[in-house]
Image 1 (cartoon, rainbow, N blue to C red):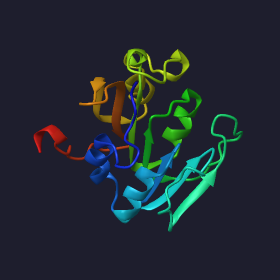
Image 2 (image 1 turned 120 degrees about the horizontal axis):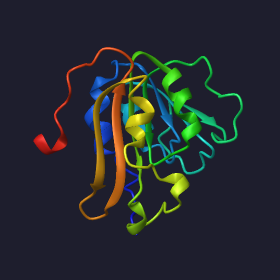
Image 3 (image 1 turned 60 degrees about the vertical axis):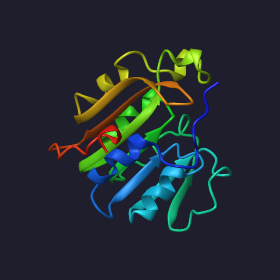
Image 4 (image 1 turned 180 degrees about the vertical axis):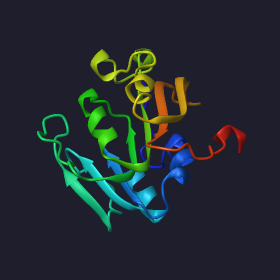
Length: 184
């Protein structure tokens, strides 16, 4: 069974966070326990964390705007008119939100997205194909509207493996690409 470390931020997120405008507004979409919200707040970002239930959110949420809503049943999009310099999504997939994510990015806003894909069934949850991306799906969903900086698809993790797709894309000009954690 695969389990995700829910205390420290994803290496994919930490690699591309420097591309987000310093002190900018960041959305942690489907924030879970808030590991990325707290990470971003500690770096000086203005953070909004949205999830259907914040009862699992860590204790360190001072100066983080918490929004509680069912993202899959909210009509209209609760963040209509909001604009973010960075949007972080990890381990969450609800395809109808893709256009809202794109429209909520500021000019030069950065999307950092990482979630499970087909092939993860052998490692653990999720196994339901509705919650697993098809091959190349994350890239296809964002490549026409945003400029892709990096995209990966494969099996990740040393001790705990999972099949994932991950993308970093910007709304505008491509900034210099940070080195991968493997190069550090």
